[in-house]
Length: 343
Image (tube, rainbow, N blue to C red; front, side, top):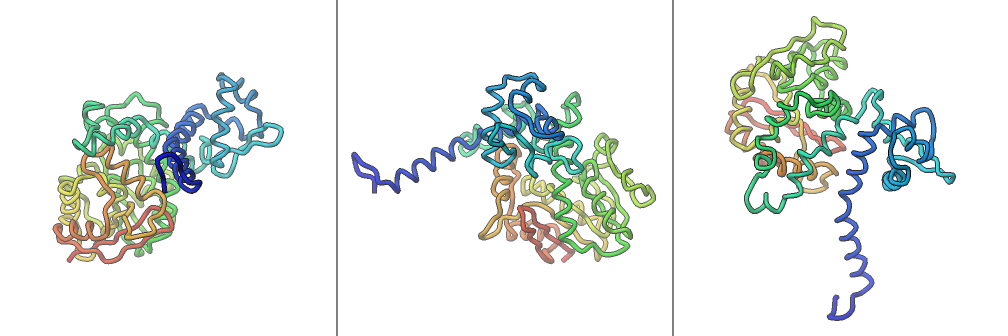
């Protein structure tokens, strides 16, 4: 108990814990800085001191050391007794040449389009979304007009980067039926569809998105152009006919009304035995893995009406689109696969 003039040791511990948590935003800021500078790439040939790194990067050595310290405490880098920094297994994912590089994902997730609205969470709680008032337009409109952004520092590149490692988990979690046609709705550059087609030789795929996005697709990496094609359009208007509809990070981005519209559009194109796969965080009754609540807050702060939903909330939306949940597959991480079929 806290009295007027004293505080117990246990209460002190809890107070310090609260102070510690309030400063935790600084470590993603540090992570963003070394990602932009390419620190990990400079350590691929071996350990280096902060002085050596600073000289190569053209930055202040003492300031870099202070940034590296906090990242070492979070196991992004390691520091030897002699002051040499080296890569941890996690840090390898920051390297540009890593097959599953997360560089673009880190830059996207720590971009000002997430930071600045989050700083006004109190305003959001009182008055609603603030993204438009900060950036002058909705989230997707803002990113779509950033045509001069570096190729590795934009939303689609970030989602593509983030997807590479997530897709391995998702594809391993679901048994795709043989000889099916799979459409990736608003699938961006095609990372998820490419992963599916690589692991299931009998499948054919359709990448469905806006034409300017499709022009940058990577499906040629399959080395078999006979198994896929692209179709442009809006998921608010019309979707291709297929056996499996993959909607990764789609339903969660939109308000209930718009999300239901997307589901109804898919439903209108489905065959009697088609299935929809909603791939995104589903808020469980308990034991939610790290990332489920965090992604939900990203949606609260930067997307107008977007949110991570419970199974019951998804079921209600699907019902209005003449669909129903067939099963829910929870991965060991923050992602789930909700399989829906026609009622």
